[in-house]
Length: 215
Length: 215
Image: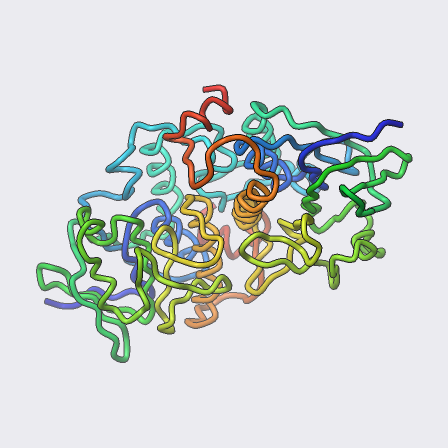
C-alpha cells in the first residue's frame, strides 16, 4: 500500500483534533486525521452525543453532537483527509514520522499531533495499556508531558493536545484543548514554514486568512 | 462612599473578562467587573463590532458584537456586578486589594483579575503609560508576566488573562484568553475555597454546576 502523506498527521478526530485541523489549515498546512472510531467527535460522539454542554465560550448551551457538526463545518474550507476505523499500532521516526494502522496501512508526515483524548487510540484502551507507551514520548499515567509554549513532547515534531496532554495546571476541558491546538499550530508553522506572512494574523482582518477560509 | 465588594474583581469587561465571570460563577464565586468603556465587549464592541470572526471554536462565523451578546447570555445565571465608565486609577494591597476609580469610588476583593486587553484601563492608554505600571506586578512592554499554571502575576492573588497576560508562546487570541480564564478560576477556587466539591466537574454531568446554571 502507498502511504498516506500530509503536512501534519493528527491522531484523534475528537473536537480538539478537529479544531487542530482548523488552526493548521488556516495557517496553510494540510492535515490528515486518523481515528479508531467510525466517525468524528471522539467522546462527544460516543459517550455524550445528546448531552448539553454549557461552558464552550460564546455558546451558552450546545449539544455535544451539534458541537462536532459545527467544528466539521468550520474545518470544511481546508478539506483535511480522514481515516476512520483505523487504529494506530506502530510509530516510527525516520526522515519523517510513520504511523502504521492495524490493517497494515500507513501514514507519513514531518509532524504528528496526538489528540487522542482519554480513550487513546482504541475505545477500550483506557483499561488496557495505551499504545502511546511505546512511542518514546514519556507517556505515563494517561498523559504525555508537554511544554506550555508549543505543546511539544520530548520528541521534536511530535505534539500532544487535549486530554492526552499533561502539564502543570492541566484541566481536561474542551476550551483548553482549543488553546493548545492554537499554540501548537504557531510552533508547527515555524517548523514547516508554509507560504504566507509570519506573525499574528486575525480572521477578522487578514485577507490571507479569509482567502483560505473562502470568504 | 461605601466600597463595592466581591469575591473577585475583574478589571476589563471584554470577551475574556466576561468569560472569566462565567468560569468563576460556575465554581461559586461572585464577580464584579469594572471597565472604562460604557458597555461590555472591549475591543469587540469598540473596534470591530460588525466584523465577522471565524476562529472561535464551534462558531464557524460570528460577528464580534453577537459574540459579546452570547457571552453576556452565558454569564447571566451568575449575575455578576458591572461598573462601566469607571477608570481604575489606583491599586492598593492591604488585608484585601483595593481599586480606586477616577471618580473616587472604590472596590475591594481578595482576588483581582486583570483582563484589560490591549486597551488597558483607558481607550487611549495604549499610547500613554499604562496605570498597570504602578501596581508592582511586573508590567512591561504592554504585558504582565504570568505563569501558565494559574495565570497568576508575581503578586499572589492578582491574576492576568487575555491580551494583558504575557508568557512564552502567548498569542493574543480570544480562545487563549478563555483557556487562561478557566485555569485562573481553578487556582482562585483553591484560594477562596467556596462551598462545593473539589476536582474536575463538567457542565454536561455535574448536578452542582447545572444547578448554578439554573438548568
